[in-house]
Amino acid sequence: MSTNEGKVILVVGGACGMGAATVCALYRQGAHLVVLDLNEEAWEDLVEDEGLEDGPGTIDFVGGDVCDAAVRQRAIDIVREKYGKLDGLLYIAGVLDLMCPAHKTDDELYDYVMDVNVNSCFRMCRDCLPLLWDHEGLPANIVIVGSVGGQVGSSAGAAYITSKHAVLGLARNLAHTYRFRNVRTNVVNPGACVTDILGNAMEKWPDRDIMDLEGNEIYNVRGAVALGVDWDGKNITGFPEDIANAILYLISDEAHYVNGAQLNVDGGWTSF
Ligand SMILES: NC(=O)c1ccc[n+]([C@@H]2O[C@H](COP(=O)([O-])OP(=O)(O)OC[C@H]3O[C@@H](n4cnc5c(N)ncnc54)[C@H](O)[C@@H]3O)[C@@H](O)[C@H]2O)c1
Image (tube, rainbow, N blue to C red; front, side, top):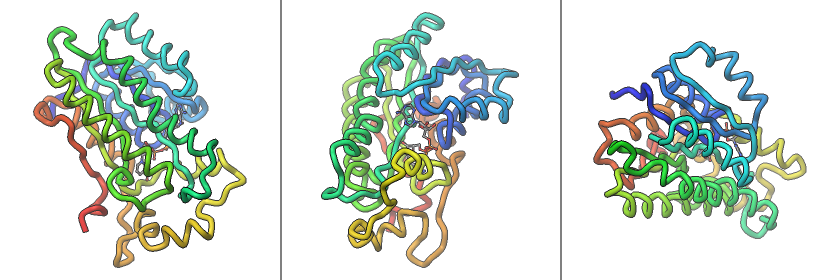
C-alpha cells in the first residue's frame, strides 16, 4: 500500500482508541500530523509509551474541545502556517450516549452527542476544505469515523444513532460536491471495538446508568450483539488497529476511486 510519508494530516480525536492507533501508524510512515484532542493526559502517555518523539513523523498537538471554535481554528492555523496545505482530515472523535432511549434523553445529553459527533465534524470539514482541495494538483481525503450505528437503529441510544446516521449524509454530500476538486470523503463504520469509549462516557456522566431498565427493554436483543457478542454467543469484538488499517486504506492511492463509500469494519455484525 502507498505510504503517507510527508503527507500533512489533521487528526481529530487522536489521543485514545482508534485515533491513537491511526496516529501511531501514520507517524511511523513519516507523516506530518496535527492532532486535536481533549484528553491531554492520555496524549502525553501515548507519546511516551509509543515513542512519538523519535521520528520519522512529526506531530503538533492541540489540546482542547473540538466543539470550541477557537480550538478548531488553532489546529487549522497550524496546518496553514506550517504547511500551507492539507492532505487528509480524519475526524475520529466521538462520544457515546450511554444507550439512552429517546424519552430519557434530555437536551444536555442530546446536544453534547450531536456537538461532538456531528456539528463539530461538519464545521471541521467545512473549514478544512480550502486547504484540502487542489493543493499542488494532488488528491486529498476526508475520513469520518461513523459506526454500525449509522446503518441500524439498535446498537446505541437515540442521540448516538441519530448522530452516526447524520455523518453519512455529510460524507456523501462532500464526496459528490468536491469530487472534481480532488477531495474524496469516506466513512469507516466500526463495530464493537476494544477502546475506552464506554469508560469515558461513564466518567462524563457518572450519575447516569449505562442502560437503564427501560433502555434495556428496548435494546435488549440487538444491544447484546452491539456490545460485541454474536447471535451464537461468540465474541466478535475488534481492535483499534483494525479501524486504523481501514482508514489507511481509504486515504491511500489504491483507494483513489473510492469516494462516498462506507466501509464497515465490524466482523460481519451488520451482514446477517
Ligand atoms: N469503540 C467502539 O466500539 C466503537 C464502535 C463504533 C464506532 N465507534 C466510533 O469510533 C470513534 C472512535 O472511538 P473510540 O472507540 O476510539 O473512542 P475513545 O473514547 O477511545 O477515543 C475517542 C477520542 O476522541 C476524543 N474526544 C472525545 N470528545 C472530544 C472532544 N469534544 N474534543 C476533542 N476530542 C474529543 C477523546 O478524548 C478520545 O481521545 C468514535 O467516533 C466512535 O463513535 C466506536
